[in-house]
Length: 437
Ligand SMILES: *Cc1c(COP(=O)(O)O)cnc(C)c1O
Image 1 (spheres, rainbow, N blue to C red):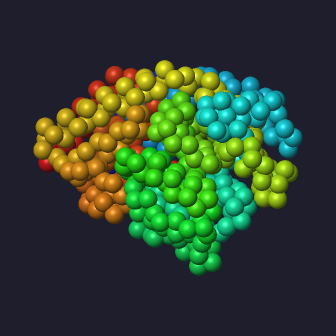
Image 2: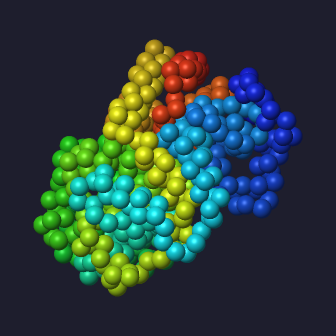
């Protein structure tokens, strides 16, 4: 498959002389890294073929070690909302790096990033910065249990909240692609207090529930919109029993709109989790809530959490550089980009007679090879496992367009995608749709 991609070579071809090949690197990688990758989806297990090994990236493009160029709709699964290697981010990271990479002491930029996040959301008064989305949700659950004195957590099938033990059960994203219900190595005890409910149905709660954790727009089983009234219903159900509502905004947080899902849906949770965009492509996560709830965290309260690299100066610099560029107007532009892609892909599939739907919530985009957009994990799985996505993925990749190597992932656009890339993507899609029909 790899050789066929060279027609999309970068015009400045300098990087094609590395002497490295994707196949060669994958072989070397598999000898020293399980599956050759540091996160399972990257291994192309569910789509087949050899992963491209990235040499560099710029704006809407990634370039592999063989010099092939791809229009990128992976965008690191969300963080690079400005596009790759945006000059503002690169400069901020370079400046920060020259002043030291980690101190183990507080910094000005941590304060600024916390203020920037709190400023965007009514009701969010304090944040604790961590180093990944996984850490954010893990910490959020510990805070919820500490604050309520209760043990049980309700999560929704097909929602992904990172890879911590208690939250992996019925996870979307790579867990879904592996066909695992959870993971080996997770004890029965670790999930004994986790209740899994179907997405888009307000579950019955009782006074043993510490928190209900939800992706306000599900973006790890393709893109599944919350049904009208679902989030409002969760808010009410939590209030009735004194449980905390937790929005996992690791994707929606500052990709959906300026104020995230709280602003978009007008529903205010008790705890928010962030990651991805707020780190600008560096390791970063955050958990936020009211000052009252956050005062449960050490050193103010008895819920312990810590991190050697938490609030890392490179990551805070990158996150600030991104958030400072993301004005309310940016979201209108990103929405236009996603809407153009949605319309082009939809027309390409329609014209070829391929059953597909391209759901969109603002700038968030999904792609399903079925007649109806799914509403929950069961309906998403029926479509994602029907074998059509693999054909689409392979056809697009050899034409120099990289979608995520798994049917359960969302489609990530960036502010760097112009009409040139969108037109090329839609043209490639027309050819692939013909082949699929
Ligand atoms: C990516 C993701 C996470 C996990 O974040 P990591 O930084 O990969 O640990 C959690 N929740 C959601 C909704 C995500 O999309």
